Amino acid sequence: MMSILLIADLHGTFGKLDSFLGLEPDMVVISGDITHFGPIESALDVLSRIDVPCFVVPGNCDPRGILEVFEESDAVSLHGSALTIGKLSLAGVGGSNPTPSGCPFELSEEEIDTMLTAATSMMDRNMYNVLVSHAPPMGGLDLINNHHVGSKSIRKQLKKFDLVCCAHIHEQRGIADLDGVKLVNPGAASDGHCALIRLNEEEKDIQIELKTF
Image (tube, rainbow, N blue to C red; front, side):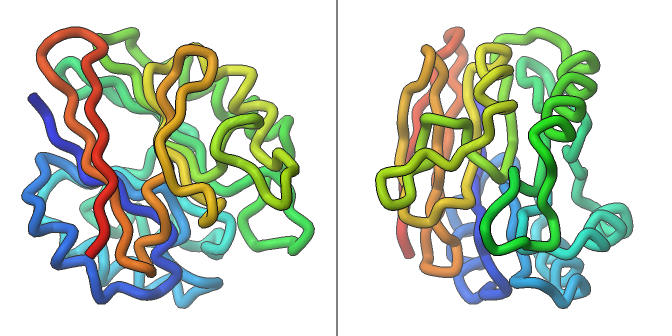
């Protein structure tokens, strides 16, 4: 069994990080928005406090320079990339599809599609295939005022995965199933929310627990 701590939407508020890490995960996944429009240097301090393997993508509120911070840290950026760890394959895309706010790390649907296509072309098909994104797929954990605001490109490529770890829409904290794929939004870590994911030895046995500190 492998346990994964999923956090996202810290927005520069890091006071609960030690409580999250007290769950003693085998690895940490961060689905974006470590900062709230910067400073990007704060992300380096946060990542240095994590002493297990850490995998991260940027969020729409992270300045684009945060990718350089990821390179300086011990964390692994999954933005537009993929890797395999035993029975787990991870791919990632950060930022978000366009929003009305014009945030610093937004991508067109075409850019998201291109990045996902490149990442999945590098991804080995495995017992567990996981997408780490900031934006949710269109139609899944993406409602704002009864409107779906998720990424059409992530939805298009959804079935390449068994699990999508997403964030972005704070009000859509939860676990869902879309097209036979599990989705989880851990909620805003700035409010003390996280998720603990367990990948069990039997194929496709994914257990997810939402937690609040």
